[in-house]
Image (cartoon, rainbow, N blue to C red; front, side):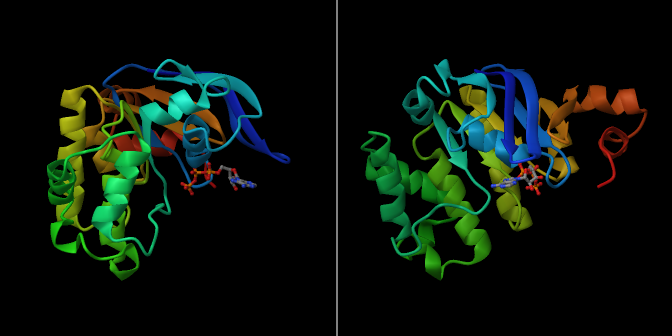
Length: 236
Ligand SMILES: Nc1ncnc2c1ncn2[C@@H]1O[C@H](COP(=O)(O)OP(=O)(O)OP(=O)(O)O)[C@@H](O)[C@H]1O
């Protein structure tokens, strides 16, 4: 579902992502871990066609990033770190607009269900500017999921969420797995990676330093996933 070959991106002299070769199958839920500045966001932005690779290539849901970026965009949802909601448009309208951008005319009930799943029902008439940080994050997630993408990229989705909303997001990701959605999630929460992800990719200095199920990384390190992470990544 996601295949990268030598995918690379430099910013001037900074090699943010260096020759990524990764294959992620349909329905896999993959955690993307790594220190600050390791290259996670840069990778996700390239896969979402928001940033052009300086070298290498990738396909997402069978569409080539460079040859068919529109095909990629139609197949994916992308929830970026800062969120992308229009601060002035009320939540319900924003969700309906997002769905229509993907050619969907969802019945009101679908939008209502998504609002319910992310605790937005009572907030649907408010603009994002009038939401708390965590409520806005929930809207970002709802916007990324409303059109039921086959591939979902989540950039630190649970940062700033309260424990209940975080648990609700986890439930949602488990449901997506049952529906066969492929999800690549960057996170700094190791307990989340252990509880939720089939597989973990650890990136450091722009290169993948580990790739496998959390249990395999733990047994290789002879300790916790935290021990494995610390052994595999360099001090900043
Ligand atoms: N627009 C840019 N111009 C110059 N350098 C950039 C740019 N965007 C990212 N970088 C650099 O590329 C490297 C990778 O950054 P990236 O945002 O991908 O890291 P990350 O793993 O997502 O980090 P974090 O966990 O802090 O979100 C860093 O050294 C960063 O400073």
